[in-house]
Length: 270
Ligand SMILES: Nc1ncnc2c1ncn2[C@@H]1O[C@H](COP(=O)(O)OP(=O)(O)OP(=O)(O)O)[C@@H](O)[C@H]1O
Image (cartoon, rainbow, N blue to C red):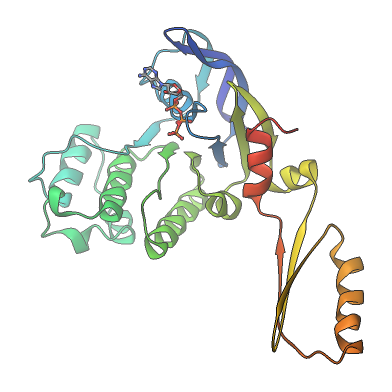
C-alpha cells in the first residue's frame, strides 16, 4: 500500500502550551482514518498542520495527492445560492462540475435557498460538495456530522463510504464513536500531546479487553449482567431463568462500546 500522508515528529505549541509533542504516523491511500481525543487534545491543530493552514514548529509532513478540506464554518456570502457557490469553486479550481456528486449530496434540492437559509446539515453537505469540487485524493473532514440528526448523519456516512469506494483517502476528526466504529479502517487516539493508540477498532477492543452487558427482561423485572466471556455467561443464565420458570420477554447483549475503551485510553488509564 502507498502512503497518502506521512508525519514525522510533528510538534506544535501555542505560547507555552505544547499541544503536539512529536506525532509520528502514516495514513495509507484509500483508508478512512480517524483522529480521536477529548476536547482540546489537538485534533484540529493536527489536521490544520496537515492541511497547510497552520505552521508546525517542527517535524516533517509528506502529502501524496491533492487535498480537499471540508470547512466547519465558512465565510461564504450569506446570500449566495448553493449552486452558485459550487460553480464559483469549480471555476476557481478549474474542474468540471460533477453532477452525480451534487445529486448524491442533495445539492440540487437546495437550489432555491440562500446560504443563510440552510440548516446545519445542509451547510455541511454543501461544504463537502465544495471540498469535492477539487476532485481531491485526500479529504479532511473535521467533525463532519456534528450537530446533525440521525438521518443527516446516515446520509453523510453513505457519502463517505461512497468516497472510499472511489479510492479517496479520508482523514476525519470525530467525537462520535459509533460513527468511527462503523466508518473507519484505523484510528489514532491523541492524549496529552501524543498518540496513545493507533490501530483498528478491533485492535483497540483487543488492547483494552472485551466486555459485554446483558439485559434480560421478564414480565415484572429487568436485570442487567456484565461479563467478559459471553458464551460462558449466557448459557447458565438462560438455564437459571428456565429453572425458575421465568419467561424471558426480551434479551439484549451489548459489546462494551468503543467509547468506553476510548475514554480509558484518552484519560491515560492504560
Ligand atoms: N489559535 C490558538 N491559540 C492558542 N491556543 C489554541 C489555539 N487553537 C487551539 N488552541 C489550544 O490548543 C489545544 C488543542 O486545541 P484543538 O482545537 O487542536 O483541540 P481539539 O482536539 O480539536 O479539540 P475539540 O475536540 O474541542 O475540537 C487546546 O487546549 C486549545 O485551547
